Image (cartoon, rainbow, N blue to C red):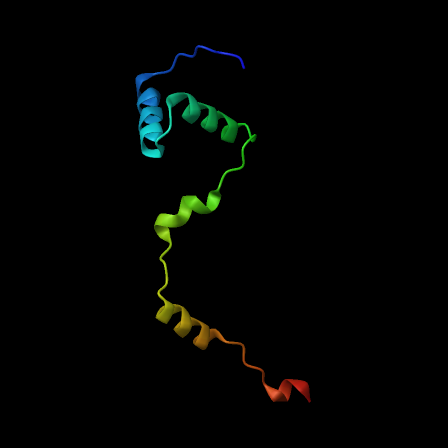
Length: 79
């Protein structure tokens, strides 16, 4: 494994430190992960990008939705 020294502005360093702290990872692992994602070497879970915008349905809500959207076959379509 190769070691590299990089120089970055304070704002970028702060963002990396925040990301590392939020994920409970070292700076090294965080930077490696960010670089691998950016270079397409590590798949990104894009679904996670939208979790804060998606609600979680209760069992009752899901049941109601399924009942209202259940496929209905019209017998006239088969004549």
